Each structure stands twice: as C-alpha cells, then as structure tokens.
Image (tube, rainbow over all chains, first blue to last red; front, side, top):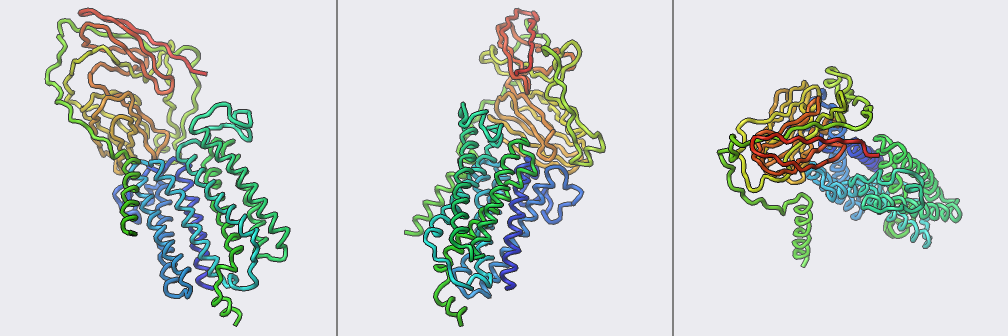
Length: 307
Length: 255
C-alpha cells in the first residue's frame, strides 16, 4: 500500500512538473537561463533566491521540480526493484527511470541549442510518456488492482486504447503547435477566420487546424468510450469512475483550449491546457489498463489474491 | 544484429540532432579586411535626409517591468520603442544604410567597439549598427541579471548570462545581416536590433528623424531604411564628387 501511495505521489509530482514546463513555454522563459546544468554559473541548488526574477522564476522552478521528480523516480525504481515481485512492474520502474533521465538531457540540450523545434517537441512528448509510466506504476501497485473480476470486454479493449493513442497523438500535435508558435495562427474560435475551414493555408494554420480537428476526433472517441462504459458497466465503479472523469476533463480541456485562443494565449490558461491534456491522457490510460486487467493480472497473481 | 540496429539508430539520431542545431554548416575563411579606407577624401560626398511617419502617431502603452523588482525600482514601466515619433512626424530608430552600389570596395574594420548597454532594464540604444568583425560590447549597467540573446539568421546565435552588474560581453559578427535582433528572455520587453554591414555607411535616425551617410565615393547607390515594425523602403540616389545627395523616407502604419 505504501508503495502505491508513493507511486501516486510521483505521478502527481510529474503532473506538477508538466504544468511548470507549460509555464516555461507559455511565458517564453525557455532561454532565460542560458546555461545548463548550471544556472548563471551557480549550481542549480544554490542559485540565490533573490535572483529568481522575470523569466528565470519559471525556468529555474521547472529545473528544480524536474530534479525533484527525477529523485522521486530513482527512489521509486529502487523500491520496485527491492519490493515488487512482478518482473514487468519492476521493468516499468527501470523504464520510467531511463525516460526521466533522457527527459532531463533533452531539456538541457534544448536550452543549449536554443530551443530547436524537434528537440522541444520531443521533450514535451517524452514528458507525457514519463507521466503515463508513473500513472501505470501507481495503478498496478494499488491493492485494488488484483481484486474483483476483470472486465474482459472486447469492444472496450478496442476503443479504450484507440482513445488513449489518439489523445497522445493530439498532445503531440498540440506540442508542435506550441513550439512552432502556431497557437494563434487561427485567431478566432470556434470558427477559423469566420469559416468552418480556413480560407488560407500556411504551415502554422495547418498545424493549428489539425489540433482543432484532432480535438473533435478525440472528443468523439472519449464520448464513445465513456458512453460504452456507462451503458454496459454501470455496476463497475473501476470503469465508470474514470469514464466520468474523462468526460469532465474533456469539457474542461476544450474550454481551456478555446480560452487559450480567445485570451491570446494567457500564460496561465495555456499552461492549464497543457496539464489538463496530461490528465485526460492519464485518465484514459487508467481506463485502458483496467479494460485489459484480465490479461495483465497473471494467473499466478490471481491465485495468490484468491488464496 | 541488435548492435547493428542500435548503431544505425544512433547515427540517425545524431544526424537529426546535428540538423536541428545547424551542425552541418561550414564557414569559409574570408580574406582579412584592408587597413586603408579605399575612398579618396578629396572626392567623397554624402547622402543625408529625414525619415518621417505619415499620419497620427500610434499611442503605445508603456511596458510593465514589475516581474523584476530590481527593474521596477528604477521605473515601474518602460516605454514601448516599437514606433517612436517626434515633432513634425520625425521617425526615430530607423536604420538607414547603403544596400547596394559600393561594388567590390572593401573597408577597414574600426578598432573602436560599439556599445549596447542594458540600463534601466532597457537596451540603450534600441537600434545600432556595427561592421562585420567590429567588437560589439554588451554591458550590464543594471543592478539585476540579464541574459543576452542574439537571434540572427546569417550569423551564429548566442545566449549568454550576465548575472553580475558591470559584466561585459564582447561579440564580433562574421557576416553582413540587417538586422540582428537581441532580446533578454528574463525581461521579455527588452529588444534591440543591430545592423551588421561590411562597410561603414549606415546611420540610425535620432529624435529629429534625420540621418547622414558620410564619406561615400561618387556613384549611384541603393539606400534602404529599415524599421522594426513598419518594414523597409529603398531609394536610389546618385552623388558626384563632394556632393550631398538628399533622400526622404515616409513610413505609415499598415492596416
């Protein structure tokens, strides 16, 4: 149980880190600390607090939170290695550790190379993978994971992962939009230059429009998945709870996306849009993993729980 | 087999990283600049004129500096210098230079440095010019820290920290470029523009909108006026020996 609580704490810290990363991009502070891993020549842990001014506040906070999350994931990986009997769960810990180390290096490289779009987008995409790994570890170390009868619903096992993958792709398109500065390439909402389809096309407009079309597709998939669960699995709280959460988060996320455009990218709204995207992905992943619980919980584990 | 796949993947990844940071470009060594000015002072003329703004000057809101208490202590706001119009429509901060007409003439690089100061959490001056190879000194005269981030297209990008007041960063541009934007990511309202040329015939308009390009050899020149938000304009002018050609530019806001 303690391991599960710790894993949940790590997942929450990772979501906070994604929010902090969103603030860095939204405030344009990514290069306000020009050196890495040092901060203006100081060790990042001894950089004087009175110098956390302007954009440095966001960039330096992001680095410190990232260091904290990195340490938490090291502790989680060690804990899993020492205490977790399932080999595949231990491997998830090692994978999370490798991913967070890679993520740190990508973060450093993107600063030293002046934020090249491919590296910055990869940094944003890998952040979601790290978050998904921590969510997965928190879920499968929960005592409830092995209790009860698995769902075994073939339809759910098709649409839930499709929804999760679609959300991740949508997040990647969103990251591309952010890092290519196309967030306001279409300045109005819900229409595009007053029309359903933009009358003119540039790379920025195409990326932005793809994100809007993607949002529509993801919304349809979420509604379909949640609708399926609420119709067929009303007696299974482990399925309908994440489904309800998905619907609520979807409404919040679309609202935040609209407000991001209408507020001409207010940094706080923009950052909340980023972290809510991660929460939508994480919730969809939880539902997906629970849909596959009958395959993920091995026979040995089921027997042990039954005994 | 696995090792082979890993090697190929690593090579691809390295290629992507190299492409992302522009690692493939190579600079060819240029011949050293001459010591003597090739223009005969006995025949040298000049081009002078004024840059004006047509219509009512835009009313720009001052820029808040409260994200850094050290800046706010000096002044709560900084003026928005994106369009500065003085009396009689005089347009300030326009970079005027000889764009074409000097042929193969090459000019010595000044031994004196041009200074870009960070004072009151603003770049002073807002627009300046320098020659290729000339020292550009970026000073930090503020009681706070700045990062100096040049974002050129033809030259090498750099981003350096100045955490201690009084620090100085010296840079020499290697290629002609109009203009090189400078910014401070700590204080996002800070912007400056440096015009880098391979000759000394450039000027920045002052409060009266006037400019003068002195020491030009007789000839026909393309003169360009660059403004950070209003765009560029060009005019042709011909000057004879000891003559002063006159050029006037008039900018207006684009709808």
